[in-house]
Length: 360
Image (cartoon, rainbow, N blue to C red):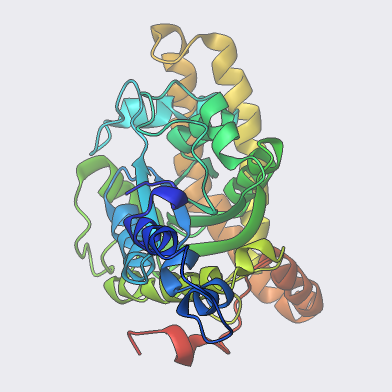
């Protein structure tokens, strides 16, 4: 629901009451004076824009949990679901899945269908819900942030980013941070929801889910994706944001969601992710040099990349994790410093969980 603050039915009611009583004598005890000094809660309602693209539906479930408490508190939330001009299928055929990599990494997004809101619509807070494809933001979110409408909607606004993915989101979030800054937005908080399964197991269960649509237990491995209890617990962020908006905290230039275990970084995975990002950058340029997306000329390069990806998953990644585990005593202080840096701005502290986590 979107409405101008001055067109809010509640606001109209109070405005009418003020006009109809304008000829009454006022005094320190006058209800009109009391209204002017202590406006009712309805006048504090904020407008929140939630922009989301969810290929599997998991991200939509998390966004729903965050939005619920905001709407319950009376804030006006508009959910804008991004629609690519050419939809991405789910399940994803393997050829199309691999063919999307170069453009993802190079942030070369295809067009979107027109948004359902005008670019000049004013919001008090923007929440961007995105997936990760090839260690980069999913292309529909990249397209939104690069569009003139997206830039206008974000300009000068506090922004909260929300990601749901397998477990590697650091490179994608860095790209999001850069794109938000280029649009004139102000990144205030970040929320990360990840698959808590063992990294080696998720290398199997996540592609299986994306390519076949099946996310149930497989060969003794847990179901793919964010656990149901984690999704339900996302409502704590909506509750905290509702309180923050009531206090006008979105204007404070400070994080609003600290103490709620917003992010949890495994610095060992961060090192592996950095190596993967560099490899993807090389492969993406090579494949794009062979032809445009969908063209047969780049199929051989895509095949070679697929073989490389499988070999890397089976050999390089486990070796990297093993070496980091063996040398962890020597790297402990460096890794802890890296963790603290990467968990900014919202952090992994839990001092506000008891107050806001309704699932506890």
